[in-house]
Image (cartoon, rainbow, N blue to C red; front, side, top):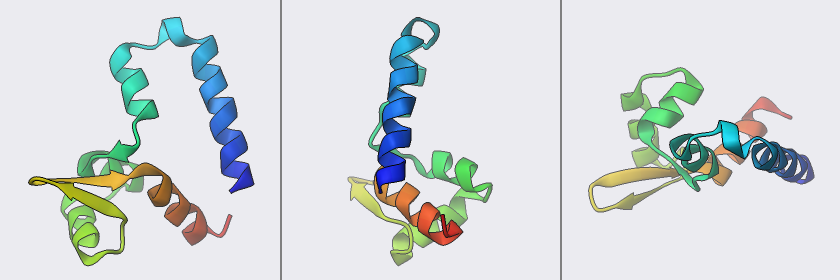
Length: 86
């Protein structure tokens, strides 16, 4: 957890220093607390249907708001870090 906190702080600092180079859409995507099914699938390099199935099965931490399913960014990244053994 300490490592991710340090990485997150340094990453945020880099964005503050380069804020003029980022568009508002890029900034919103990077600072969002959630990921879409499509964004998570791109990170994992898998089909979005697989991500959706794993969310429904409870393997990937997600919440459902109306008909939309959102993946919680921090627990998702922690899950990936634990799976990689880092």
